[in-house]
Image 1: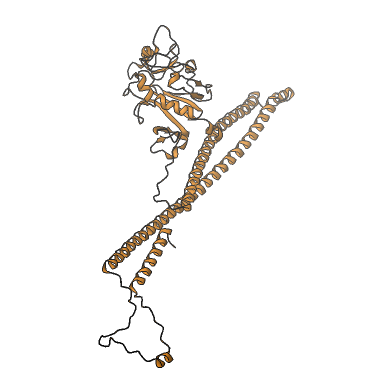
Image 2: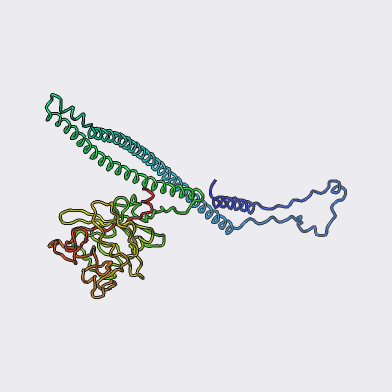
Length: 468
């Protein structure tokens, strides 16, 4: 086992050891012995060099390696040993990292599995409650039908029976009181039943909203679990040098499970810059908030283009970001408002989008006014549909004789001025006589009344329609 580099180094070490042993062994040539009969038959011939010492010639053995070669071999062995040690350490470190990653992935899978089981149990509980509500509703309808039938029978009593009642010995007033009492009892029961039905419908609606949120969270957890499985499969295919956590980027407040204290970091595309937005329940993104006079909204074109204020307080998100959000997917618009008597009203539009800077951030899409929202604020924005954005230093309105932005001391989508001024001056005094420079919504308290609080929110409608 081990990495290919580690095995290669072991082979090199073995080769080096074999080469060293080969250099240290001397080479001695062998001579064949002379035949015995030849030595006996032929005596040694006398030589004239008897006075000299004669030694037979032998082959000279190969010289042993020098000290320099020994030192070089020793140094090579030391270097190889050090490298093998380093590679073994790296291999062990990578093994440890893989074990830690596998352990964390197992823990994450176990945690997500537990959450999924919990969500399934909650979903089953919601379904049981819905079934119970439907059963109660059926029983209520049956009771209501019985009461209606009883009321009809009471009204359709034949006249001869009424005459018979009046001819009896009992006082007529008592009989009349009995009949009237029956009618009153039926009416009171019908009123109580109607109240119960309204309350039941409200509870059913709340339960449906809870189930929708539960389904949304379940889908989010499934998506994150699928991403983790993909990362685990990629790690199993090869060992990376370093493992960096993969950050999940949100594209709308529908992914509010990633938000921290209601603030979410959005990145609409991998190439676009990220930015922060405040989120509210049900996936709503707050793009403008007005609650005090701390932040002036009488701003230049550049300020409205880039945005200003504190997203934890009063702010405007900026026309560039608002265009990016509304062009990334289809959105709906909701405007929440409150007066100084704490009366609240809501206006909603089923679609909303603005153009880019080249088209002067025109209010290019404003859908149908949503009349089902309560308490209703009325429609005071449709008059502005199609208008270009204007500021005091960039007049793009349709008023030929005036500058609506200067007249209203605000930026906005002014037509020939308008029926609302959401970015007007915030008045804490004399708000009832603020006039057109204040924050007003014509169909809620009129043009002269400057509102206390305003919120402008958007939400993608594709996912919401799927939930419905």
